[in-house]
Amino acid sequence: MFDARVPGLLAEAVGAPNVITDPVRLRTYECDGLTGFRQIPALVVLPGSTEEVAAAVRVCHEHEVPFVARGAGTGLSGGALPVADGVVISLQRLRRVLEIDPLDRRAVLQPGVTNLDITKAAAPHGLYYAPDPSSQQVCTIGGNVAENSGGAHCVKYGFTTNHVLSLRVVLPDGSIVTLGSDTGEQLGPDLRGVFLGSEGTLGIACEITVKLLRTPETVRTLLADFPSVRAAGEVVSDLVAAGVIPAAVEMMDALAIEAAEKAVHAGYTLTTAAALVVELDGPAAECDGQFEQVKAICDRHGCTRLHIAKDAGERAMIWKGRKAAFAAVGWISPDYIVQDGVVPRTRLAEVLERIARMAGEAGLRVANVFHAGDGNLHPLVLFNEDAGELMRAEELSKNITELCVQLGGSLSGEHGIGTDKACSMPRMFGETDLAVMDRVRGAFDPDRLCNPGKLLPTPRLCGEKPGRYRPHPLEEAGVIERL
Image (tube, rainbow, N blue to C red; front, side, top):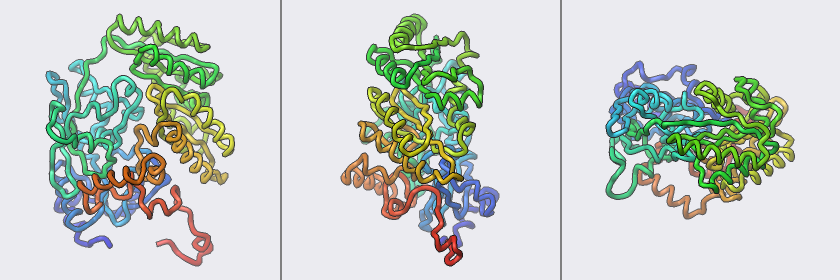
């Protein structure tokens, strides 16, 4: 039962105007980007500083109230799903770039700063922030830390964990600690690394120090069409085998291209089976040499059209088509599920062919758009809920992620496990592995108040049918009510 004293205590901690209790306003926070899971919280607080975050967490800790940190709400795994009779701690007011240090090439940020705004702040110094999630205009660095997000350029530059030097964190008891250091060096266990990608279950990152890179001297981008998905997948393997490490290698299949073209008219070929976006960056001489290798490998695998961006405008348009793909699927399907999994690059063609078979058996369509350079798939399962296709779509979505594990990959590359895939964790990890993860979580949060029900399977979570709430037949008949 929610302690009636908590709203007043939280109002003292963050200011009464920054506590939301109105039922209508609370619905804004009932889910993240995975809208199939919904739960209205008891209340929402909007702290304006690290100290206010800590004060709010202490209230929750002292009164045994579960709490969930929330950034922009763009997550796609249900990682920011509220808890019934719990508190959402929204970080949307913490949006300041606290420092740009051009000499040491680092930035200190509050968690609500968007990924793109980091680069905008660093650009006047000839610097940029390398991780490049496709949602970089809206996703925040706090969310990137929680999920260890990657993006288009992770094949060359790595994920968020490779670019975060230190974190100032509010632990689940309300204490404030620093994990890591401004140089990235530290003594003892790598607690910074433990925290990154923990999906908000170990605490709340309130100040994040990231490293910045010099803006590349040259950037070369091409768009290549192929007669089959297999041919495009084989190009990716051959690029790496040849020692070419592009800044990005992205793939889209015919359905994804159709959707993107309907939305943004980026100039992709509607009749092609698959397209690759390949980008190289670095010194001009190196880019020129590697670019010739890329073109030769594309030609060897039957490339039917090779478009080389002539300037920054054409390059931006190519990327606009790729980055619009998720949202653009709404042009070709009334409903869809965005999934996330990883396979070895050498098995890209195999997994895509198997996904196509699985989709056919389920009577559904799957559009594929993904970070081909590191095997991070983003299959989009298309369905029509009004036509009764939801359950089949959810089952297909789950089967695709578990297929990735079967082929030597993982359940997630960057979207996280959250609520969506917690019940699939035993497919990837043994009982001992999961027990160790739970012990680590318990060391940070012995009362399990910090983002409970996420990441690790629990009897309650996995004993229920995942997905949207489905009323019991007796409820539909008016015999019983849902509390």
